Length: 104
Image (tube, rainbow, N blue to C red; front, side):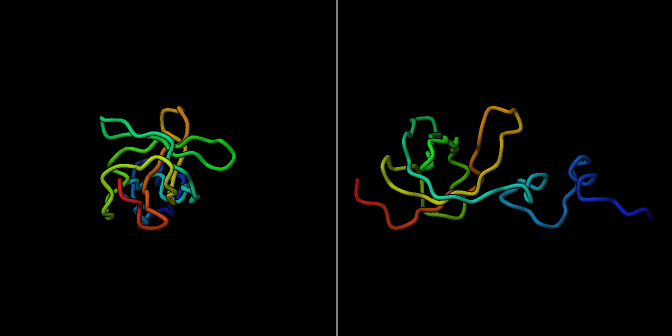
């Protein structure tokens, strides 16, 4: 059986054994950072912004495994993120609060 590189596995859609929130093909490409919530919409999505002004798209599915149901504008979060498959910018894979959010 020939050896298959990680790149070939990604191209074939095979798991390399390190799943990140169901994003198997991009699990070794994600980055982690600290962000401030700048917007949350009624349809289950919003945006985080890093100190350098980069926006990260957040969908409610990125809250899996946390008690979060939405972002609170102005609060700080930690997020694992990747470049979108569609080339539209950065997208959060997992979002965690840095501390307990203030009461809204």
